[in-house]
Image (cartoon, rainbow, N blue to C red; front, side, top):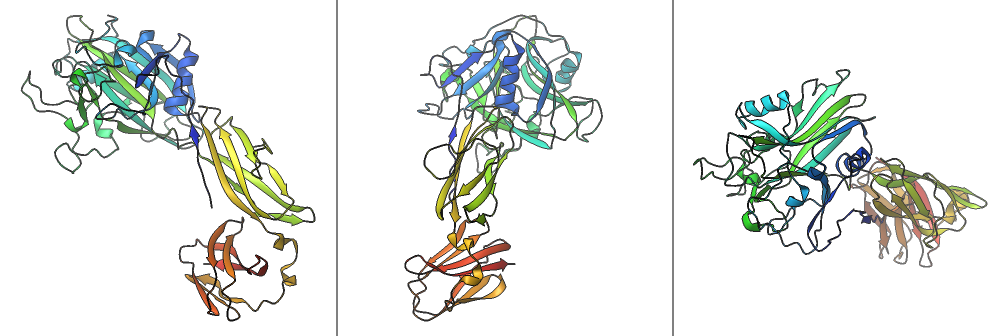
Length: 481
């Protein structure tokens, strides 16, 4: 079996392709934001409705990160996705030659639930106000069980001299269930599914090979930090933190500190409708805002969650040849399908599930190229398909070759006996769709040969034996238990 996957990404880059990190702004049209959420964050198999955005248009956008010739000592890790900031997305781009960069919009954001949540989490004091919010809200549902992993990187100019437990920037990803109570994990009360305690990837400890212990807090400079010299307090979740003052570890990133990619999960059940609120906020004392923080989010399984593959039926032989029905397996809608059944580079069909007549026996490489209608990803998958002229006549017409096999049904081992001195013959074990699973060239001088089939899955297969001129002289159906 041959299976080759070639993935091509269509990514919108900014004009300066020399930089490692590029950001691009969105228009005031909600369609741009919805497209970005579908293509880069949630995928195309969910339903997003009632989308709204609160914040400056320069505070939100998309990003792409070129992995070639990376100069970061500790990699940024995310290739593209959504960026949300408390200031300007352009301040996220290096070189990091300003330790206090930021954009103050000085727009107060009133949200009692969020304010109380941050107070209860000991990130701000009750007298602190919320400013320069970047808020994305929408309803989301899925027609089937849907599990999605997000990779998240948080960066901030508050590192390290401005870290404090009284006012801080913070990022939250709230999920609640609306309408009926279908999902037992959620109800009408919002839950921040991106607290550090919900991280699902294993994080190695800084000073050992053991995995670090993570305290559960909202994502903020005060909850993911090194030792605080200002307050003389030990670090918290320090294994998540990467120091980047003066671009120490990644000069392509404009923040003085950032996190390693943190992995979070959100699972939806069918018929449930959820409300999502993604918010990054600046906790401000005495009405002064300005130091930027930003969060980068992408769907971690963007390249693999959409299944691109195909299967095919057993050939149906008639006087004209072998008819085979192909079925694509794709979890995305609105795809473009391009089929090449005979390796001539010519597209033979654009049907999602075509039928093709092979008029001659032989080995064919069948190729399916799929272009996702969601994100433009192109994948090419190829399989070997055997069309055997043997099946065009009855097995009862097979000449007596002196071969036999036992036991049948078989388990673990299959024994083949035949005439002596049969080194010029070879054996092929073939599944019902024509894939060659096992091939042996030459028996040697023995008249009994044993095949190990312990690794073969249970099912029905064919065993065939060809002579030195590739003429089939034995063909029998076997059952593997």
